[in-house]
Every structure is written in structure tokens, then in C-alpha cells.
Length: 104
Image (cartoon, rainbow, N blue to C red; front, top):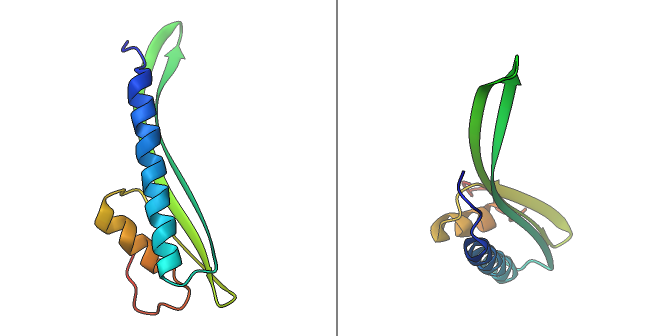
């Protein structure tokens, strides 16, 4: 089993903070009077044991970004598992409750 690299976890945390900051800055530029964003990324290992033997072993990785914006008393939200710069911009634009032509 591979050891957990605390340096990699710290780097990942810094990147997640950078993405959140970017998304909230974009929401403000859209005219949001208030905004909330949440982000997470993780990995795990699950094992199923049957009759004293490992039956199934799974490695899991997941990530997600969600944003809620409030503009002119209206609430909008959007989410994605793609953290690329262009994608986070589209997610932020799609969260605009006044946008009728946005594509997430």
C-alpha cells in the first residue's frame, strides 16, 4: 500500500483554495451580491471480505465543485467535477439565475 504524502495533500489544498477564490471572484464580476462555493477532492480504498478472504478491492477518487449565487434577490446554482479553468468559468456563468442561454 502506498503511503500518504502530506506534501501532496498540502499542494492539493492550495489548489482547491485557488479554484474557490477564482470562482468567487467570477461570481462577483457577474454581479452577485452574495455567493457560496464548495469544493472537495479525495480518494479512498474499500474492501469487501467474504468468508475471511478479500472478495472485492476498489480504489476510489472523486472531486466536485458547486457554486450558489444570489443576484437581484434570485438564487442560482451549478456544479461540476471538472476543475479546468474554462470549465469553472462556465459553471460560474451557469449559476447566474438571470442567464437563460447558459450551458453548464
